[in-house]
Image 1 (cartoon, each protein chain N blue to C red):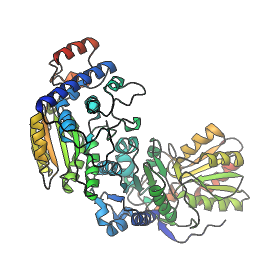
Image 2 (image 1 turned 180 degrees about the vertical axis):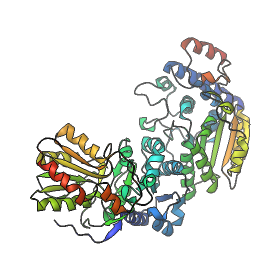
Image 3 (image 1 turned 180 degrees about the horizontal axis):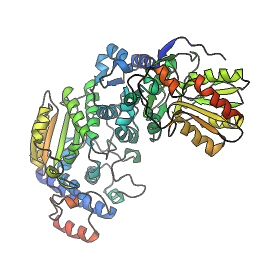
Image 4 (image 1 turned 120 degrees about the vertical axis):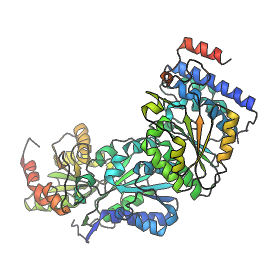
Length: 320
Length: 275
């Protein structure tokens, strides 16, 4: 199947539109803002439903507690700020006030990944998936494009009933997921069939995985591409199937390789269907300033940079 | 709805019974926080037997006043009060902190204890949750109160002041916060560990209506809450001056009893002291 880029759109736009849609059909949704409302996409909802938008200032810890209180009162709170603050500054509040109380609340982790760009390392969330996926009761979503981010927000509101961390980015990226692809939390999408090896990707890296699969095809390697948009609970069956049928798995994430998506895949593979796994992502370092595209290239997250290593991994009989 | 008791003598006798049950449950558990639990017993008695609109028969009654205990470590006083009010059998207090118990060391809703509003224990979080609850009631135009009990040492957490700002920003006059002002924390006196004074000025400047009272005088506490309910535009703060360990001379004002439970021998002596 061919995937067409309908045009580059930031995934935060999908979050914003999803929130507006969900908020239109469900008047229990309350949006919480921590000063950067427009830059995380809450502004559409805030403009349309001012009485259901709560401005809480630059006070993320309080935002999480307030979300818990709203959720325990029957509201569905949706809070968003940059992932570094949403997930990391507030980890203890998320752990106790949200997760231990098992409150249905949605935390939007904006500006995720190195493609945040010129703001530099302080604002590039590269550890959020690792921390969020370690918390009991938490669901972690990492959709691949604006269309899917919109679907993910709506699913988080309508289909889930527990804390949700929904990760998205700032840079405009290809919007390609066909409209007819339904978003089911916990269910991976096989975007390209293939049995030589598997490219398991999440978030922005899904588009790169498709590009890489096309390049591999030129070399006679048929790669399977899995879009794993739910990091927790992860689609165990799809991963085991890929390990058994293709024998090798490459994980791709815009996140530290330790503790994040690659680790989640390796946990399944090592216990249920051992096979070589190669992890592509950020390798134990902070990011830096630069244009999104420059950073993705420098940190080895573009298909044209990492595909060669995948070819070597495929050919190599023993060492991953 | 739970029958409100107005007789101070009767309330004091209930408080006495709760104190005994706190000590018994802590002694049986072999660990836990005696000092703060005893110090807050009069506040809890006043709340659950006079102030709060609640119904032990219907813990989830959606018009109930809600009480958020931010300092989860004084769970023994919450549990003993809930049992006394009829949420669950008093005998269950003897399972405190034991494997499989609904009475977790710090409150955990996942264990299904009736009457428990919030799992809490990490300091500095309860007030934010209470703000969220009070905001939800404002949005729903519900006429009920959210109460939040914070410790004085807990006010050293920065997140408390984020919550304090937001409560006054949204004019949450349906939120009443009670500070357990006993001047002690684990390392010693609050003013030595990290100075909190001038406490009243701090809260006033954050936009709260501040009241002070003797938190071990049930009558005074009840009338102070009545005043707090008159606030039209501000959230209310009640600085309840309490004596840590109130009722047991050797525990009173002794910070070493912050996180300690009485031995079997101590329990016998203490129970006699409460006769």
